Length: 297
Image (tube, rainbow, N blue to C red; front, top):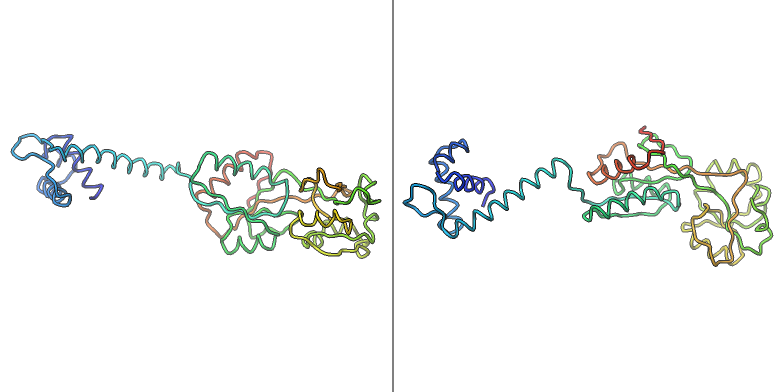
């Protein structure tokens, strides 16, 4: 049962005359009559009572007429919605490291999934190397990269908030008495950090030549696990401010001085076409984030 033939049937019923309907449809009367007969044969029913000058529907004909209007109306609405991009659905894949500075992105995502229940979200945690790899192989739509990065192969939006570096340390540790931590304070102290932060120039510049006197005992992927180790007093953890809730723990956060911050950039591959839902997310982020510096490189 083709939608086209249902439209023919509706036109005949509304015109109550096959000849008039054929003229409006710009087809010949024999062609229209044959289409209607084929429809009856396909359905195994009789749609019209023969022998009347005007079209008179059978009971089955009335039923089909009502359903045909519903079917063609739904088809018309679907086509209109798709053409006007009213339908927002699909999966949005976003990868990021841990940072409270990505809250504006999550706010936009939250609004989308509340208003568009057909949208699904896939959040992937990882460092910059993992994010780049997945952006390049197409398994991520967007990545959020922290710190100074070379983004020549990507479009990017600079997010407004920055990450502030500091340490998590036990309250009873002597270094916890300081309000801010200088490069001198970290000499010889056991430190656990992310591999990425250790390699970043911004941290190396802050530490200067003293970095060679630092005792990096290991690295972490998830700050929650590093926090548990820092609570033992075996080391302190280098991390972002407010990244993890330490209320009720034996830890305190102390920022570095001079202040060390990381910028956050939302990036996407220049060489890949964004899906409809990904483009919708991007538009909403730009609209709701007027204070951010948008750079499409």
